[in-house]
Length: 420
Image 1 (cartoon, helix red, strand yellow):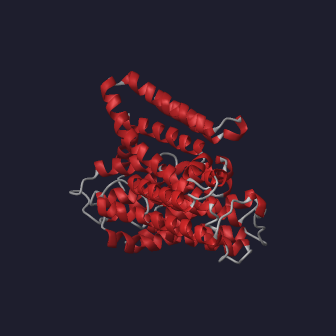
Image 2: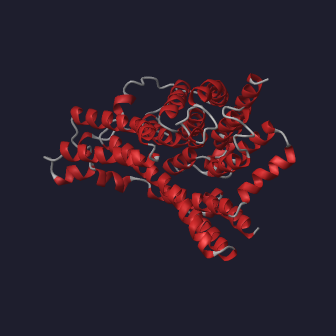
Image 3: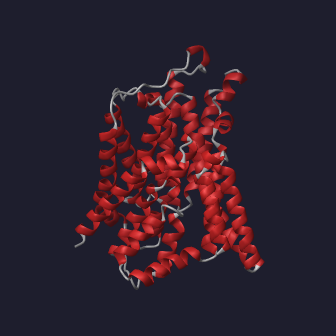
């Protein structure tokens, strides 16, 4: 119970970051370490160490993936690569741009994954929207769209990938069964937000030519298309080698590192450093990575203590209804990480109970994937966007959570109707 209390206090400190004037990364790290310290004092030391090592390997994979993706995006940005896309988007209407960004995020997430898509699209929107609070609305829609797009693809979200690898779902079936509910879960909040959007947008001021690094069109194109191809290559690399996604992103970063070194080899050091991977790493938002680490450590402590498994068992014993249980797992994933919740469900219901492509597994993929959008710290995409855009927990709760909840409920309703 003390472990749960510490998690709640830490969670409150993260949500009250602005009123308390405390950085959420510090609160998250403190919560994660204290949770594991309490766990050590209440279990066998060796068992706690083994569990920590197991969880840390998974957490490290996510952090390395996040760091690699953010660095590749920073490199593209340093070379003005996003201009290639932003020049194609002529509209200044806030409503039209919101729809374009949301649909791009939805379909891009299915091919990449929700975390990479959130990072790329948030960086892209920074080039299109100057006013910060307006940009936050776009960032909120990116979180919803990326999570919705990831739910119907076996490589779009980590929980869908878990079910795919565990043989609970098959690729063709999950795409055909979930694309419509996922699209509805995006369409409802998108219509809600587009209706509230009015007027035209002001684009950010262009940096004066003398302040910009000398970059030729050839260099810009090489880095942009190389970076995009390497990002798209990550799921392909995972499918072919069966290695974790972070290995693919590190391979891509290594290749892009060599490319930048070669094309800038003749330049002066002062110009080359800003356009190199070393320069990009200095600009990466490290506090966001540490915030991620703290949150995942705290949740892994709850998982090791058995609290998340007990939560799943309690729901199973209380409601005795597959649809209700799955909907509640989706809502719970808005507060705690969806990965251990899905892992608990996989442990509770073997394939002898629910066979491959059963209604439960399909609905679980939808609910766990889209439910995290209801709160900004309920998904990897949300946590990444929160760090990149400095969005406060309560702003997201007031402005984005309600339409996200409406979309979640509407998509779930469509899925249930499809299966009547």
